[in-house]
Image (cartoon, rainbow, N blue to C red):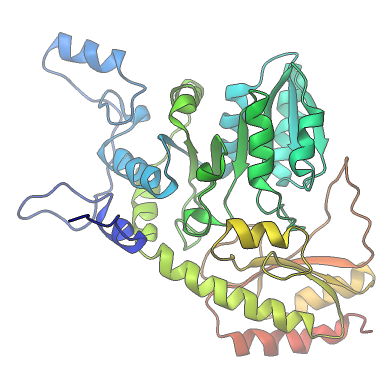
Length: 392
């Protein structure tokens, strides 16, 4: 009798928990500690020699039982050969880039990446002597034409930050792998529930667990998931820099993951409903949501994703900055904040920073995160504030 593979819900419920035995806790405890002591020198020396392997008890910065449980669970969710935790999504992206960057190297970066990713590339890697070249995020297989012998990696997002173009992930991954160049993808938006990016050919995933994985806007966490070939190098970079995930954050991530599938199902439905509502408003010029047919790369999303997050942007008809400010300030059920992925709804005006593909669409660009609020409440809140903007 063939045993079917475990369902996603089973993995989220059963994995990453204490080992079996009577009287055990349901959840992993918050584990705090720095020094780990040994009774025999030979055992200590063996641990030190194997300190970069997930599961080795050596020193608190390298990991503990709770950290390793979370890494194992995430590796299973992502289909990864290796997972290393970091203190934030920015730390995960920065450490992944540092693993492959070198003085004189050439780094290809999608023009719509997260602002802090661009800031690290321009502010740190460039000082190291790395040449940063930004490319059109919709380039697809055409990225092969940008490869040089000095290209060290390709960094991109799915979808792009703020403007939500969905790249052709497999095409970029195939072109890069054919040239022997590793790809790094920020998959914060889709999570492993909606996209299995390593199975699409990507080499490294670097993303924020502070958003949907933890799910309650109360923890900072980053994740680097990769193929086995790159796992050790990535882990060494994180450990040699000295980055460390806190014990409480590990516990909050393990707790948040138990409800991840259910929460993602909700945000998928709620996000699409609100995107459709926005599209019907006279003040709205365009809705940038990958599940909508008019969003750039929609066909890629439909092929590679099984659902959509509730973070998207709206282009409103041209208006002045004062109108935008009055609109945002008039909202009562949307907080103004830079993060997302929690239970609360958020609003944030966005000014895309581009160098390869200028953002020149007239109108005000505003990003929304749809939380767990009643949709009718959110729609009434928005409807009362929309008259501050120009209608057409």
